[in-house]
Length: 156
Image (cartoon, rainbow, N blue to C red; front, side, top):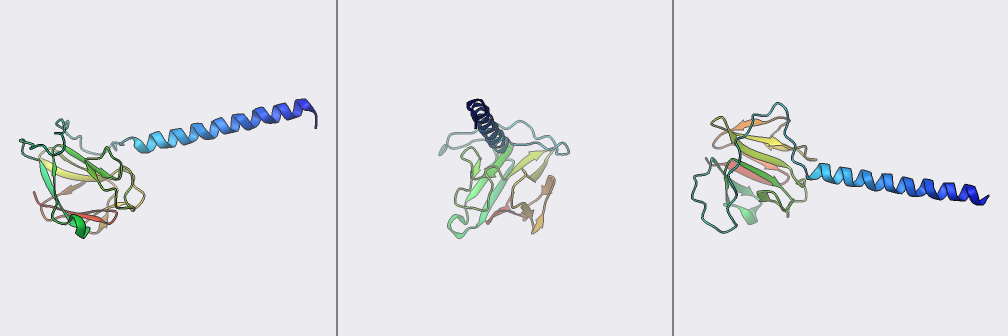
């Protein structure tokens, strides 16, 4: 092979490598974003989150109780405006031990005087009372929300 052809092939290989890396970055950034579907009710702006361990004085719009896994059973999760659930550290409810949960799996929010839950494009889906959801679903006391192997019950 001629030296010129080898140089062209080297540049093509480098270009392909950069295109691959750009695609990886694009997918990663897309996974970290929290999409808002067009048909979802608009949640009111979330109040600033209190530091961990502090006593939050505002009454939560919604409360969820962990039913499964057994190690977290009975844990109460207050929802002040909006709560994201997933394995990512930035979620309001971090489910790092549940390998069936996506980085940002689902969100629960309060809008228009009602409580809602929606799947955020997760791999394994979100279920309300055993039924898979594909758009925001209104939830009420006693409803069970399943994300991965974690089950939450609406207590208020």
